[in-house]
Amino acid sequence: MAVLDENIPVFHYFEQLTQIPHGSYNEKELANYLEAFAKKHHLEYKRDGMDNVVIYQKASQGYEEKEPIMLQAHMDMVCAKAPSSKHNFASDPLELHIENGWLYANHTTLGADDGMGVALMLALMDDENVKHPDLVCVFTVQEEAGLYGAAGIDPQWLKAHRMISLDGETFGETTISSCGGRDVILTKPLRRVANHHDVYKMTVKGLKGGHSGDAINQERANANVLMGRILQHLMAKGIKYHLVDIKGGEKPNAIPVYATCLIATDTDITDEVINFFTSVKEEYQFSDEEIFVEVENAISDFAYSREDTWNIVNA
Ligand SMILES: [Zn+2]
Image 1 (cartoon, rainbow, N blue to C red):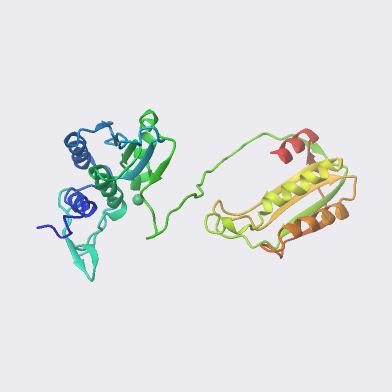
Image 2: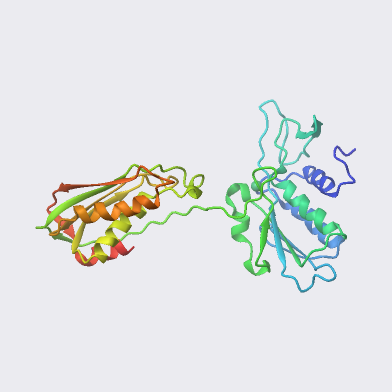
């Protein structure tokens, strides 16, 4: 007997999913289920060798001219259980029960991530009363293992310019934009030249920093960006200098809180840098008010060529 109310389609489908084991790399049976759903409802579908499935539903009457919309959820769930549990995620259906109005699985994860996304799409396609444009329902595999299904799916299958991913984190919240992460490693051989100019060390500090995902919307300063602006400003002022050294930031996921740079030049840059930074500081007076720049004398026997300096500063 069903634990959830079978008259509510999304619950009906969710409960069916929980009866099919579907950990990462074990999505075949769930893909079979989706394929059977598509056939039963006479819907066009595609399935690849990884078991990614895309089901297409034509627009409701009167919505044929509207832009198609793509919906997406991942089939696989995280399989975790209490130490006491004898559950076998490869073969056993989940055992559901309701406690104080909340749905649980018996000492195992429930797979609501992302079973609810899968169930929502099935319920939507099953509902003849909902008016919608052409639907492209994308069911991916191996998300929890590293988004491999999404990476492997044929992009030709995704015939829509708009997508709603049904895999949110917080109840009642919709994310309309979010930052991603990507590492870039650039290497370039640089040419050192002997240095006979004065050397200045500039340090940008006093920044609030913060997590690059969490605090990025708070208009905080980034020390690397500020240092780049100082260097570009000096260049724009026609001051000829050679880069000696430049460093900034600590971790890929933290907004850089300091940056240092050494340059060699015959011009005393101290006032120019301090004055320029006064106007930069004004920009951040409400979001990162403690930022400042320090200019000190330093020494170095070498510097990078003017050409390399130009390239690095412009990068
Ligand atoms: Zn998820």
